[in-house]
Length: 318
Image (cartoon, rainbow, N blue to C red; front, side):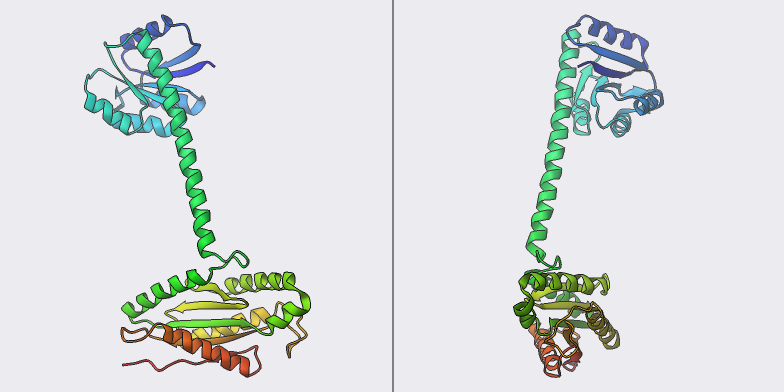
């Protein structure tokens, strides 16, 4: 492998000294380009890929950390070796901390040190890329794990534990802001008999289609979860009663319009019943009160024949 090196050094004598040092150590193939300004270096880096950038920190058009950061942004693949006339460990440590792989002190180096610095810098850059890739992979895996914890694997909407967590948080926020909170409980009419007649495979496909339909007809601020079996829950924060009813009715119609044949219902289609309850959470109210009223409203919708929206909303307390 031939090292491609960009030397960014405005002092011609220092550039010649470094070049001669490298010629004294011919045990590695290398090709070097020399520029004396940062803007010229950026042009070079835009046109060619370099393995190594040897960088003087004091250039006519840039100095210190700004120079290093500019080069690092322009050539993220290159190992950067800072070359400085200051024998100052603090400056060297600072440059390493913000992105350099190694540093050389002018007047205190030789061909052996230069070549060793280049080998170390390339190896450190390789390890840095590997660590970054590993960190990114771990982050992706962590995100997938988090999704597995909160997402129902069949319907790809939130699951029951995720709903309970979100419900508690939304209740607290609504209580603190004194805003209304509406809950919809949505149950597939005659879903047990559908599974018995058509099989669980088609039943699963129905759940997937219905979950996608519900999600499509909700607002970004609304929260949809698979509550249990063929039942879904929807939280509507800060929503007036009229709007909540309109949303519930739009969900009912959307499912009916899927035209999923089900001979055990009055419409000969797979439909949903929806229970609606709404209140303003207060410190002296039990969060389960809203759940109980939505569940009773769902019972009323089922008892009335299904495929409809029913409401059981408790009076708001003073």
